Each structure stands twice: as C-alpha cells, then as structure tokens.
Length: 444
Image: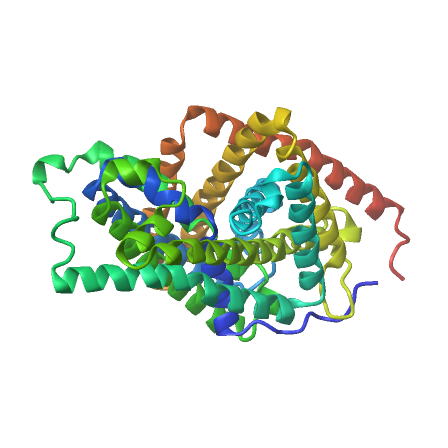
C-alpha cells in the first residue's frame, strides 16, 4: 500500500539549490582547460549557451506552473504526446542520470585524493569510497526531501565559494589595472563563427540539470510559484557565475598554461592570490561534486517513481515510505549506479564507461528537445497560458536541435539506440497492465 502524500518540504531556496547544485558539479572546474584554445570566442559561446539555457528554463518553468506534477519531463511529454513518447523520454533520461552520477562520484573522489594521497595509492579504495558516498547520500534522500534539500542548500553555498573567489579576484584585477599584463587581447579577426559554435557546444554540458526543480514537484511548497521561480533564477545565477569565472580563467591566464592544467581554477587563485589558496580550493571542488551527487540521486529516484505510479514501470517502485519518499526507486537506481561505478574502476571497462557517459549526455539533449516541443503543443491547446511560450519554446527547440547536431553523429545514433531499447520495456509493461485489467473482477 502506498504511503501518505509526500510532505511539501522544498521551499524556494532549496529548490533553487537543487537547480544550481545539480548544474555546478566538479566538471565545470575543468572546463576552462577545454575552452582555452578559443579565447574570446568562448565568451560569446557562453552567451549563446546561457541564452539557450534561459529559453529552456522558461519552457520548463511555464510547464511546471501549469502542471506541477512529479516526474517533470515525463509528465510534460505525456500531456503533449501521450504515454509512449513520455515513457521513452523518461526511460532514456533516467538512464542518463544514474550513468552520469557515476562520473560525478568518481570525479569527487579524485579531488579528495589531493588531501588524502592514500586514496589514489591504494587499489580498490577509490571504488569503496565512491560506493560509500553513493549509499550515504541515498540514505539521506530516503530520509525525506527536507534533509536532502538541507544538504543540497549547504553544499551549494559552499561550492559557490571558489567561483566567488575567482570572480572577486577578476574584478579587482580589472579595476586596478592589474589585468593589463595578463589579459588576452580582443581582436575582431580572432572571432569566428565555428569557434563560437564549438565553444557553445562545450559549455552546454555545464547547464545540464536546469530541469531538476520540476521533477520532485509534489515535494515542493507552492509548486506553481516556487518551481518556475527557482528554475529561472537558478539557471540565470549559475549562468552568470559560469560566464564570469570561466572567462576570467581563460582570458587572464596564458592559453597554453590553461589548456594543460588539471586544475585551472586552482592555478588561477594560486597565481593571483596565494599558492596555498589553490590547494584549499580543491576541497571546495570536492564539496561541489558531493552536492551535485546528492541532488542527482534525488532526481534518479523521482523519475522511476513517477513512471511506476503511472503504470509504465513495475508497480513496486511506486511504493513510498511514511515520509512519502520513494525508497524502493532510490535503492534500485543507486544499485544500478553502483554497478556503473564499479565498472568505471575496472581498468578494462574505462573505454566503455566513457562511451556510456557520452550516451547519457545525448539523452538529456533529446529530453530538452522533446520538452521544448511539448511546451509549444500545450500552449496551443491552452494548457500552458504563459505569454511568449510558443516563440521561446521554438527558440529552445532550435537550440536543443543544434546542440544534438553538435554532439556528433555517433552520439546521436547511440542516443536513438537507447530510446529504441526502451520500446520492448514499454510494450512488456503495457501487455502486463492489459492482462491485469482483464483478470480484475468486474466492478459491482
């Protein structure tokens, strides 16, 4: 028997922390190294990405305001296109979340090895710590949304510390003229459309997660107001921090130095503030990864719960605890995540893990495209009365399509293969539900 209705535990700041915390993981702290060859083109790439992200955020916000239902993208796609497309989108998105969580977990543990070298030197220890972190945070989420939200809010505030440090240093350098000896010159001849497009494709990965506040909708206080505000504000805030901090690192450090750096943010702080500060920065990066993992574990449990409650996933995943938490969905998702983590630490499986991670990112892009189209369809049907939704939804759809194109043919084909893999699962569940309906006694 399903437990009582979930407690509304997530307010505006916790929902915002879910968005910002899930977007800002450990990966963004390495992004300047990838963007370094593009120079000022990367700044324009960020502007394109942030504009596209805000269009997506507006689409999700508008849909959440009209339909604040658990599952977010699954609920929106079902309302617009029916159960089969909704299942396929949610299926691929769910897999992308727990596969991606393996990367977040392993990246977090790798930063901890800076302070505890024994982690890297002891065979098997990184995997043990990684799995332990997964299950500790799974337990936190099983205790209820309020505790998970509190952890998310705390870690989000802490993860903004290194970004704020870089931002303050950059502002001081600009206003005191100290940047003049370091800044990369802005030359019109260096600005090229292909470089901007490549930068925008790379920076898109940093915005994945803007939809997160829509997924645990039933646990959000006043979801019609809270989710749209948290989604828009969280996306804008993360985008602002990304633009300023990543651009500062790329433009104020030598490009060849940044491109070779394993910790560009730490190098930036070490050079302009204190060499010891760069080492301290690593602990905040680890906290950032820890917070992102907490938020994504919340999401990976909520998606199969919403699908099971709708009858397209095994019904036992729809059971909740006395606190209204889908414990079984969390446990199953984290068990799958544990398998992927262990595969990642088996050296022979590294290539496979990299491939699956690429697959997970492409799946998120497919979800963004379908939800953008859903926003336009539901606006036309009168379910989402938000102004300008058709125009903004179209812009979001075009942006999503361009991002999918930029991901490359191999990623797209495997992303489509993942969607196709969900078809037999959907048909199996549909047949099982039909048999259950036939065997049920007639209503009196």
